[in-house]
Length: 333
Image (tube, rainbow, N blue to C red; front, side, top):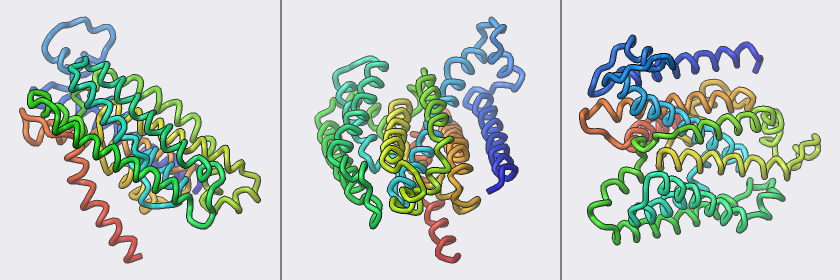
């Protein structure tokens, strides 16, 4: 893909992100005019009116958190599909979300503060990463050119199933007063995304690491043997990709809970529309994933206002028919 076409794709996606971001600031159960939103975003604005408080304390962190979560999940999905050479690979196949959810629910049952819940979720995500990495390290480092690391995929799936059983047990033992908050968090909830800066920093760092390696990822798609013959450091690249995808999923889950289908559907949509060049796909996946979750969060806040739907429910309701449509389109081609 030439640079001009890639820049055009990124530009259109970035423009769509800005439009949805602006809509997220002004649309809601309490309407805010565009001029009020701009004034609230200005550092020199020192007003304490209701519109400023709504934008600064509620809608701006939520929009930024939604963008960061979606971008991280889509980037993780695109990386895992390259690493495993499996179109069904996505962030939660590693069990990262299960570990984060289990640790977070324990913190919720204990009545911990929101920052302790997020810290517990982060610890659980990295515990799951270390568990899967330890159990499947030979397959990750060596690679299996015949079937693209099936043991790594199976290890993540079994680990996720184990975390799921533990989560079910914790929910049955949880007090009724905290059960609703736990269920919202499990289905994706950006209400607690008051501090999205850690996720945004993680996104920026991962893009700096992954985008320069995109040409090597194109070669890795041909198989480990071909990549080694062309001078690609396969072992090191596979480890970097796995860790980057795991950190991205952990940061997303810690910020917004378990939001499904983004890491699976968004990379597929981009490949179907624009091809499989990783130099274009990685930045485009980050932009499109952030756009998808921001739009889903906007719908979750407005469809049943003043009540709010879990973001993960909206992404699932939209993701299932979209993915089925893409499968039919691929089969037709």
